[in-house]
Amino acid sequence: MEDWPVSLVPQAERAGRVSSVGNVQHTGAAAGTFSHSGNSGKVTYDPALIKKPAALIAVFAHELGHYICENIQEDPPGGWDLLEPATDVTACYLGFGVFSANAAFDLTNHTDFDSQGWQSNKLGYLTEAEWSFNIALFCALRGIDHSLAKPHLKAHLFNEVKKAAAYAAKHDLATAIRTDAARRS
Image 1: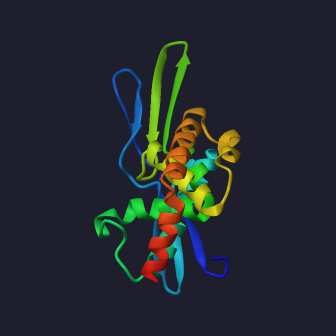
Image 2: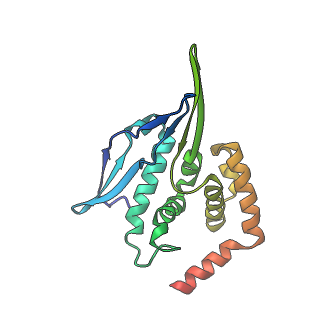
Image 3: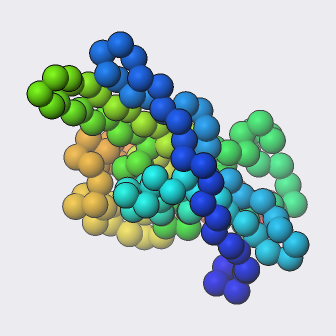
């Protein structure tokens, strides 16, 4: 992909909605988009993510995943309605699962002298559990010890990766995936 031309363009920041108790929840607006502009790709991103580098990396990985997915000649698993989740899986396959899993859901609180509240943010199309399972599969397929992800993942996510890795090993999912891929090619 290093030879694939792509430009990065900031988009308007995503708006948030504030409830009566100060809870801010972001709307369904995309944190990034991918499109073609002439002979190159164009990735837009929410400039507010510059303050959250891991989330920004997750957005870039997803959008660059579109660059790869558009060159595949068959439907995504589950059909075109599942293109976005399939693109998240592509981002994990590219090695960015830890960034994306950590950014999938974020809940923070704030308190000052006259108010308090919470802010939640969901990023991407997979749940934290789905990211954890994909990270476990990524490690199994690459022959990487899943415990190497521990210092880089939120603690509850690593616990899910550990369970998913045990399941993948028990059912030898890496071999099943490789066998299916060989059969398809």
